[in-house]
Image (cartoon, rainbow, N blue to C red; front, top):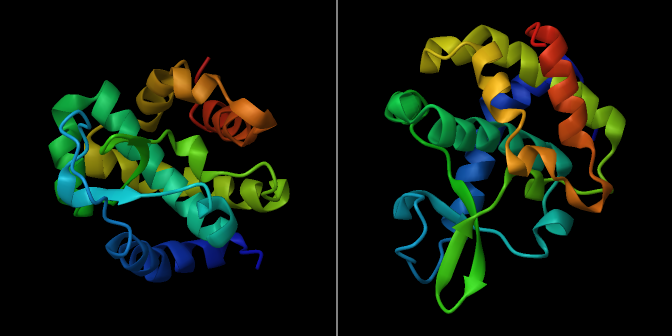
Length: 180
């Protein structure tokens, strides 16, 4: 199902959070690895079948909030708690790395090379508009500062398997927020 921009807003605000909460309630890791910095109560285990089972709309929306979450945690740690209090904290995708340990997965792991580029670009248009109108209010971080900070992050730059969706998002963000 292809969502247009106004439908993206409806999906994101009225359906996505409920789907994410339902999904995450069934994907709680059995072990609570002490090495993982993600709060135990927000960890959501994804596996190799995740990309096949879940819709791209769900994965795109979770990508967006995961990119916020991880970027704020790493580059703007002083406002991380403000972000969590304003959003009630989204579930954080983690993967099993063996011996009872889990690690937070990079947002790009929520995307698939088989996702449709045109639908990704529709999502990006919605997400950047949403970012422009809400992100700074929720975090006190200007979108231009956020994207400037994350654009050289290893997990944003090094994309495996030919997934260039993040490149397209970053390119659009840099244009929209006038970042050199």
